[in-house]
Length: 510
Image 1 (cartoon, rainbow, N blue to C red):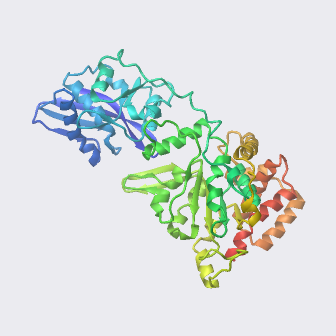
Image 2: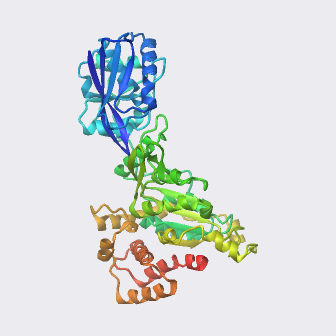
């Protein structure tokens, strides 16, 4: 007898429904799985057989053929265990198979028949809703993630027996309530705050500008000056995630298996800080079947690269394309995938190997050639993609001993949100989130420069040797500073401040 139910396969950050078909017919007792399965899917035969027997059902002694359609999409992972088991039971008439094909089921089976959580639940739930399916059976530990999707009945189950009850006696198993309206994104909570950072008013201003326009930042300073502390607090002044952004970030974390048990939506902007030994594949993504890397896990958030020159140069170079385009393409033998990578890159580094070049209190022990070799580990094209370069000096004694708190993250975030609201109104539905993402067309339209400003910028080009890309970034930065100032036009003070954030690379690297 033939039975079928739908499951899902993840490609990139999206999912496609897969029809799980099982035919129980004459022949020797053996389960064969076809449809381009990987090793984990092929091993489902043993897990399914044991789970069925240990759930007080009978496993057929005749031939069982499992087809995962369409057959040209590679299937991976244990997500197909539960749908295969349900089809086997329906094919042997131990469970009612009525209306099964309109349902979607996912889950890994233990040998005792319990249902274990799987990765990629949110994309599969969104695909099931888009396809008009009548319900989704999921492991109970994935329920919070699945119920984010409104308008799709979700049936959390702990065991294979409970999954069978959903099909045979739907009136006994009510769907879980949707949590789509319960997420409060407008008031994110963080355990850290900008008020905890002493001094560094110039750096805080630079990070406020960066947050307002989505600009990349490089901070240079001696050890202990507070670079890491400042970077960790940058997400606290970014605007809250929109529901669309939160869903997209959660999809990335879901397919990476980084959604904790009982966790639903990712409600705060990501902050990723990979170690400097991370490979190019670790940053960009990879694997036999492409998976997201650190740059995608930081989507709509902050990618912090501490000790920037210590990273492998090849690893840093893979960031050039996603920093420009907001997306990264990963191609492997098993396939290719596009992953979102709209990040704010924040990098920190010491000015030399010993860390005390440019320090006012300690002398540097490095030779000129050592300093040059250390800094040249960072390529010019990568630096050109950084809008703000700021020096982070060591705190003086009075700043260290100060007891009064500085401005809170909430106060800074309010100004940032106001500037972002102006940008949202400016760009409308062009698919641009903030000033840093402007293309040449938007740059010409929204960044009209007066003759006085052009003359000032002409001198800056000659003095600083700005490339065409660096010039555009100065203009974008000026637009952000003007937005924070509440000015419709870009004025000379806005451009002058933007130029100040572009001089450090010439001071150090040249």
